[in-house]
Image 1 (cartoon, one colour):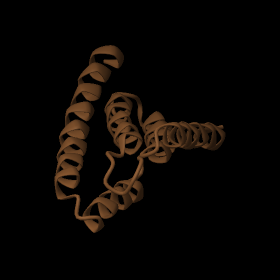
Image 2 (image 1 turned 30 degrees about the vertical axis):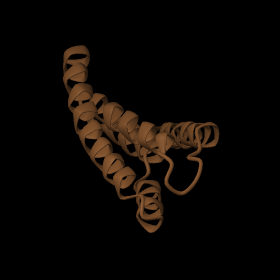
Image 3 (image 1 turned 180 degrees about the vertical axis):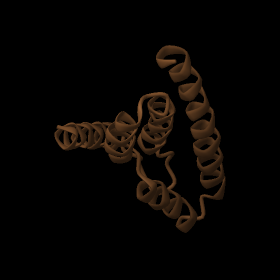
Image 4 (image 1 turned 90 degrees about the horizontal axis):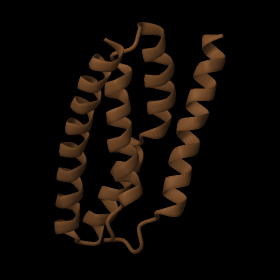
Length: 118
């Protein structure tokens, strides 16, 4: 049963990422990659929530849903595109926003998860 839940969670995470990337694409090589930023910050928040759940749900939702939703390869590609086009300001803003947003979101998710799931 856990395997089936894991597969559904991963499918949902991948689907959500596809939808956001499809409807919010960056325009041009130096444009701000908002969809990649959103999925990764949202994934960090959800992972924080998930860490307050019992162990099996941490694997199902943390690795399945959050793992499929977030994308380190997408982050790397978006950053590479900005650096290659010499859009250093955009690359710096993207990197700092992504890291700070992810850390803050994960902390908020963990705090809320501990309050809700106790």
